[in-house]
Length: 148
Image (tube, rainbow, N blue to C red):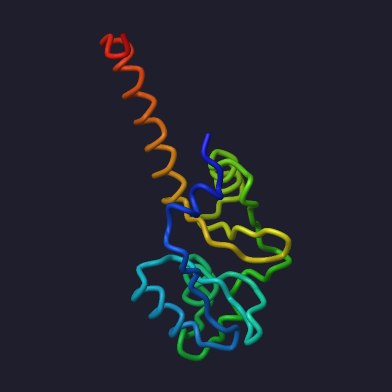
């Protein structure tokens, strides 16, 4: 069973972030350039302040009649004290359960207060599908007698 640590090793080590005072428009532009759906929000010292996702934008800017060019990221982000996260030793399945139960698409990976990475629901699904494909191949080989 794969752990979140295994999943992080398969991913790019980049964890993209934006300062809390940045405008939402700049965050959205950056997310579009990087083809990602969420950004960690970190202060000038590199301390995590929260997370901002496309969903935050949709629900806290557009639906409330605000503008992305005038609204600061810190106004719409999920602050660190309300943020869900996962540890490297957790399994990918545990990650998926948390995402499903809490209705979130991105989970920061933290160890001893340090941000190690960010896992998306897509990362978790790909990992689980890959694991299942390997199991199916092994079982098919066993049935076909390739191990004798």
